[in-house]
Image (tube, rainbow, N blue to C red; front, top):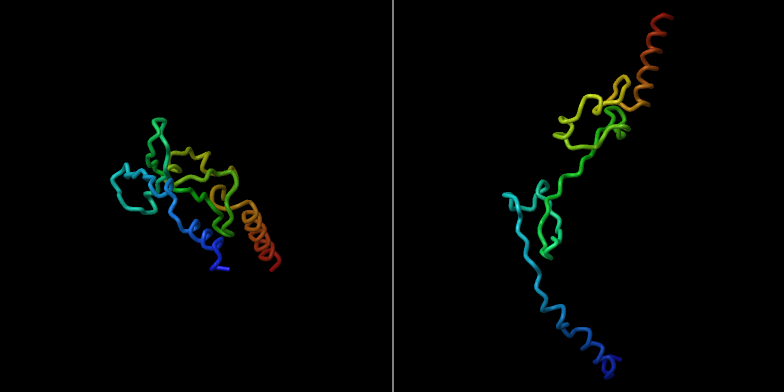
Length: 126
């Protein structure tokens, strides 16, 4: 099959360089901040300006958000922010109005209260 003229035409067309693709220039981009290495804190994304120019735009790190200290689940009702942004929040925005508000989830608080109550009951019985 490879020696047939159709196969040779197919192979030639598959490996022939395309003129439109090979001669296209790619626009080079430079970092806009002082750090010039591709580190975790220096991630960039390409954005096209209204003038048709591609530029780098700095991407902030994604925030993980607060999690329960006992079970590790994400805490409901609290914003997922970077640590510096938490410092700018008011106290009522950083916690939930409950015992162990900004550090433990409701399920773990309930189990803690139950455990403390049962331990006290045992002390009374003894």
